Length: 325
Ligand SMILES: NC(=O)c1ccc[n+]([C@@H]2O[C@H](COP(=O)([O-])OP(=O)(O)OC[C@H]3O[C@@H](n4cnc5c(N)ncnc54)[C@H](OP(=O)(O)O)[C@@H]3O)[C@@H](O)[C@H]2O)c1
Image (tube, rainbow, N blue to C red; front, side, top):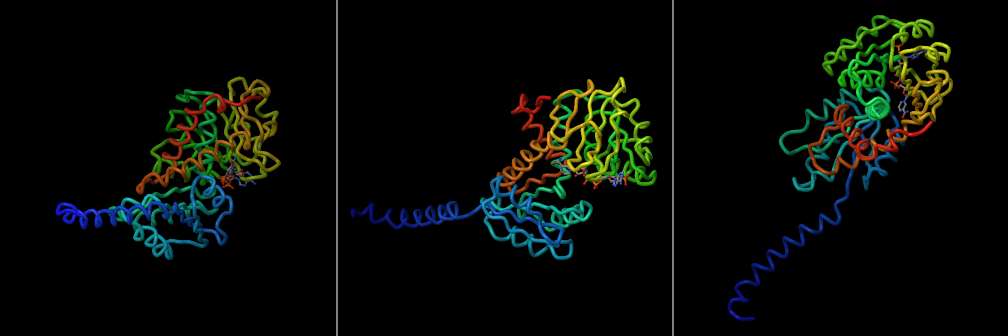
């Protein structure tokens, strides 16, 4: 080794050591998703979709609440260097959406500076389902401004989010509930959270809901699984009605005459979307969101962001979004 070589070798060896060290974590660091669920058993659906979306390891925890979440989040934010933090992410799920919302807030409060990881918020599939439903409505009716929409049983997690997205797109939205107070409280909540105005309507039974949709151009049913909200005779002859979408996949379905497999085809001269018809897109959205979590360490995927992902998917795949009869 000549004089220059003798001088350069130690520098090169040191640099090589760092390069190699840097490479090892790249190869062995897996994409890890912390699935934080408010239920006793973390949702197996969410675990499977997490793997299908690109997570390599899913650490799932049940009965997570605002009181016990801190160590779980700290484990996620303190373990990896800044350039690799994107390889850890959090998913918040569970059947109780309001508990999930409190958990989401608690998780965000633990983050500081660059000590954060990306988070997806989708308890009970509420955001992905609403985003899929609205994107499919847009596939059939691209301009929703000034359209008259009634969201039947729009007080649940899915209905509220559908109502919020449609109102943000310029539609005139009303929500029904069996209870006047609940409808009003939901409208207030939607104004506070999403800055939208919706009209609350009390409709205790099918006849009252039939009355509520008389002038509607679009009817969306987001009632509890296995509850019928409307009979076919209530909507079949309405001249202004253009589209019906039902989120309920459990018989009896939410709107009699709309089948779960309907994908934007026509029945009785109306465009119809059933729960399974738009459920395929819901799954696609969920998987795409999981993949996105690992692209950066500061992504927060709530309704608005998940809807944007849904629109990206729709833009990239327009023909199959429309579906057939
Ligand atoms: N297709 C998909 O991929 C997908 C994914 C997730 C969920 N879903 C479905 O989407 C729908 C909405 O989900 P969600 O979690 O928001 O529903 P939810 O909270 O279980 O129920 C929504 C609303 O249904 C109303 N309701 C309950 N029992 C009723 C009854 N006996 N008669 C009339 N109305 C009744 C309630 O409104 P009021 O008390 O205000 O009247 C409630 O707020 C469900 O059918 C669910 O299965 C579909």
